[in-house]
Length: 387
Image (tube, rainbow, N blue to C red):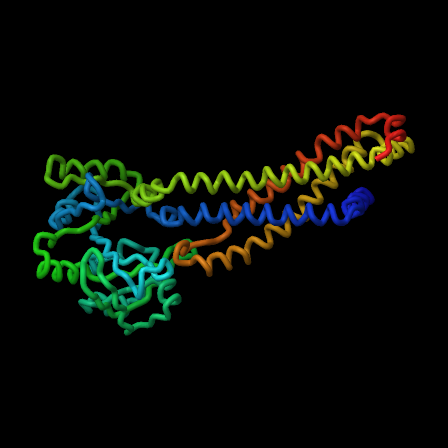
């Protein structure tokens, strides 16, 4: 107890220096936590992917569609339990600002939500959506953002499919947990196909991807190969992969950015390590005479070294604790400002553990060399030293 009291008092002997060091630690730990949370948010879509869902797309590129009649042939593959269709719509709501961007998909309304158990729907709303040709189901995050309610009409200006499209909100689906993204709008693929038949007959009877439900996730690779063999040497060969791999293929396009964010987060820690190490070096150098005095009255080198290590650890513990606590409201504010880009943005337990580890490592390393020097100083040299 006496040791901790002595360490605590030593921290604030030079108040300005200690407060500036603590402030730097708070900012560094906070920045590290936010940057790591950004990286985690980038992978949120792949994290919610199910091991029992596959995605079959055109082997050439995602921009090329697949014939709708593939659905029955895929359903006949051993191990497949259900097949749904999904087509990116790409409509504009209000204007083209990033804040008003959200995903819209034309899907197989009969079984699509059976494939996605993480979306919670009310039976009556799901039934109403299935019966309404122009009905739409929207996620909770979208509904809260725009204030949509059941019965509201949502106008979208088509880009891939020109014209003004109006959809009636027939239900709002809820997330299974906070990791589930609910910023999508789903409507009937049949409606899209009928309109395309009238305006662009050659583009009709085609879908973007098939979502394939399988009974056993451990057979994902085997079933994927079986599906691709079914359409080998056809005019539209398929590439089937797990839903997670499909999602990661989009993230791979921005892998350099993600790597840069990771690097910057650790560079911040290296910088604050240099700041804390400089603080502890200055502190130890100024107190060499005091450490020599402690040795003179009977305290051993281990105690002297432990004083410096303890002071360094206590500084980083205080700064780290405040930085970690500040990360949560900062993350909430960031999510509110950037919700359209990061619909799932939270501080994961792993991130907090990394913050704690960084603070402890910085504290240990920053105090290590000064403590060794103080422990080894000779009594005569220390008493002679003028700091």
